[in-house]
Image (cartoon, rainbow, N blue to C red; front, side, top):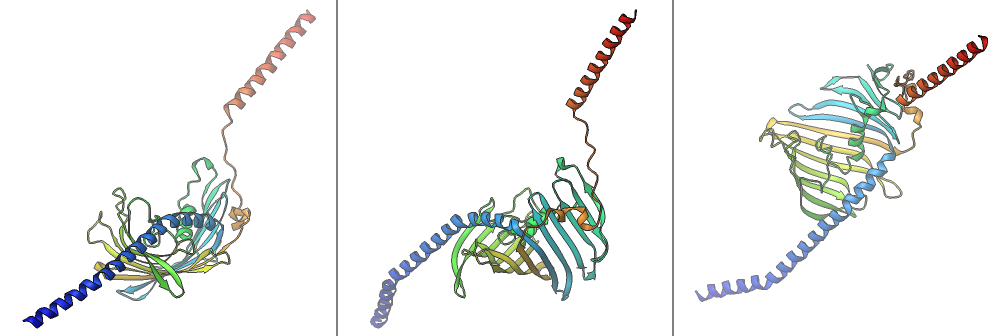
Amino acid sequence: MSVKLRSISVTTLLILAASPDRLMTRSVRADEASAWRQRFLDEAPKAWERYRARVEKLQGTVRFKGEEQKPVKGLVRERWFEIKHRPGCLLLLHQDLLKDSEPKTTGRVSVVNPRYGFELRRSSPTSPWVAIGVDTDPSDGFSLKDPPNEDLELWLTCPFTYTLIFDPLRVVVGEPGFTLKDATPVKRGDTTWIKVGIEYRAPSDKPRLPSLKGWVVYDPDHDWVIREFDMNLKWWQLDETMVAASTATFDYDVLSDGFAVIKKVAETLNYPKKSFVESWRIDFNLKEADVPSGEFTMTAFGLPEPAGPRRPIPWFAIALGAGIVCLLLAFYLRHRSAHGSSTA
């Protein structure tokens, strides 16, 4: 009995002796986590604004391939995009190659320049373009069926938004609905990235947006771009059983000044309750370049330029013209009257 008590006492003493070290270790880790969390909040939003400004110079192509993994394995969709833009001008060319496992060759392009906007279609990559819509009235911002700014925003800001998790989720941590759970460093070779745990509650007035829960790995040395993510999605406002999981890795070409240009994204989307899994590969070929303004015209696609809008004559021009006519008429009548008097 005494031996057993003595053994328990020794064990208790050892635990008590080790407890201060454990408590100190936990405290140090908590302080480090708090410091990383604060660094993320202080630096990341500013870095994303810098990155958004810098991508205004990126031009090039994006190639997208979607492959079904479950229930049937095989390539199900493939398309590529061409991106061009400059101040006052936007162009997005969308060329289908495969859709729903069937060949599809339809292409379309949406373009805006300071004078007009237009949309063209073609039946294959080698077919001539046909105009399907032209808007020469800039007062309404050029109403197009497929405005190019939406997809441009998607591809150029995906390194720091959640649009690749779900297209309309063009949001960043820190905006309403987000809860930042933790931030810890992770080693990837010789570099240190930051793993951030987040939760996002979709707004009640947007039921088609999913809520998120998971983690994202950011690169603090390159404008806090996304390097990896692992997210659970739930459309709680539509259907409690509507859930999915999305994981991805991002690769970049780092320029000499440290700017990271998106190069490739590999992503997997899993709907467990539907037994459906699809993987995506997105290859980017983007470079900083200036595009001549002539490439944003219908002439660049072998079509004639549109006629300008027939604008109404301003009221002041009408009033001025009426005034001039009245003066000329008065002068004529006065001259005629004076001439008639002299003849009499």
